[in-house]
Length: 367
Ligand code: AMP
Image (cartoon, rainbow, N blue to C red):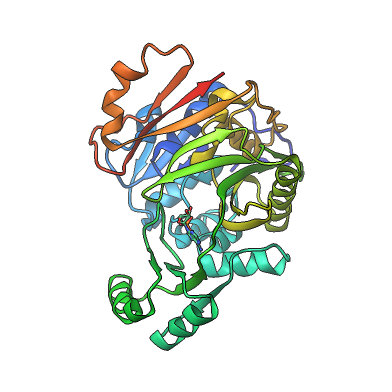
């Protein structure tokens, strides 16, 4: 195990990454630039992150033998998605004496919408109105109290719009409820008031072991079919809204005692008021613009935070940066559409199977 009393970890110290997706891949590439090899732990064959390092453990997240070896082979561990099994992270921390950043406490809160929203509300930070729902009677009551338009969501394991359904017609509620609870049997559920927001935005904040924080500016996010399609920087918000969003993000990172990154997603009304939608304790798709558009990319910032280097500048380097996700078949257009465009910076994730809705890569356009 690494000696965390004399930071930063020396070059050559190994960063463990739980998860083999594109976020792990881009973290490993950023780490390599700073002299830190990454060891990727994931069950899949040929996962994007495993293509950029020769240190790979392919095993199930609950394989304790493999986890112990992984802990022994790494100096600090992070994770690249928050639906990782909490027991795996707790095992690494308690049984293997591994340093996991952000900690299992942060993961436990952020991987469960109920814990997450309760934590946010306890800090007097606004979310949309929400409540847990266990029965049809409770969801019917929520529907009435919340003004006749709600979103039912699973408390855990939802992403890209999966695990949620909107309800607008009371007479359809019993049918929707019975179908939703059949598909998501055994998972806690919440009902949220539908928010008539003007736009969606996010702030990514880094926090180091010493408690230093650095936030990237509030960016504006556009979705298609519940999947992020584009991030525009700067977002079309007033300076006041941007400052307020950064303050909220920093307060959340400090209160959670995150060491690493925290992404904070917001619903933003026309009057500039902000509601926190959800949190992610990891690099975030809406932060990909930083790879070409900011002084320090979010991936480098994560590495800096977890190895004990000073955090980097979050300053934007261009007047505008637009990140476009290449989803599904759209990736096949890149040779004709993007290869010749001088402002386009292309990032592909090495995924061979193209599927609808699958994030294959992204392009940053800087001006
Ligand atoms: P989530 O998985 O909670 O981030 O939801 C995915 C997307 O669904 C959000 O980015 C919003 O576009 C939309 N959405 C989720 N919850 C609500 C809500 N309560 N009101 C309005 N739109 C929502």
